Amino acid sequence: MIEGISKRLDRLIWPEPNSGCWLWSGSLRPDGYGMVNVRRPNGTYMRTGAHRYVWQMVHGPIPQNGPGHLGWCVCHRCDNPACVNPDHLFLGSHADNYADMRNKGRHATGSKITANRRSVKGSKNSQAKLTEADVVEMRRRFAVGEKTRVLALEFDVPQTYVCCIVAGRCWRHAGGPIRIALKNPKQEMLPL
Ligand SMILES: [Zn+2]
Image 1 (tube, rainbow, N blue to C red):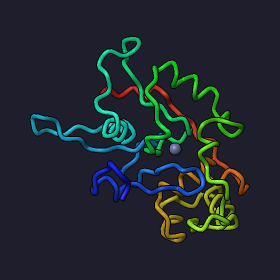
Image 2 (image 1 turned 135 degrees about the vertical axis):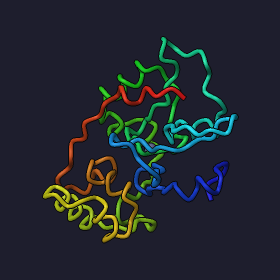
Image 3 (image 1 turned 180 degrees about the vertical axis):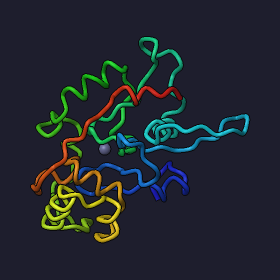
């Protein structure tokens, strides 16, 4: 179990050994953000981003008065919307979030995340379930129309991991065709 995270939540988090990302294996929005139902004090439920929820479990409530009229945004250093690793999340303005997306790919050449990565990549890492060849095969099959759900069952890994692989957000070094994911940063503006 991951320290500081409830058992219920822990079951929905799948640590990805190469990137250090904690992939959300619960429900995902079409743009890749994990979603969670949160109980309000009055007993009703609301849906919110899983990354926002985890950030608050670690750091407490997101401050009310954020920059601009949109408030604070929980941003990803790792450019992986399904990731809920608190070390990969930071509180920023929506402008920071846009800037991050514009600079997409910069972390491959030297950000905090690269420094935190394990030194042994891919199948040489004892925790890795897949080999580079599996990853390339998965990407090829996805590129010709196979569904991530089917690939997840066959390779016995969570669907969220398959999405991460085919989008090139993890296993970057393995090669194979990578889907260029279109992101709509506006969808991240959900109030909490
Ligand atoms: Zn991450």
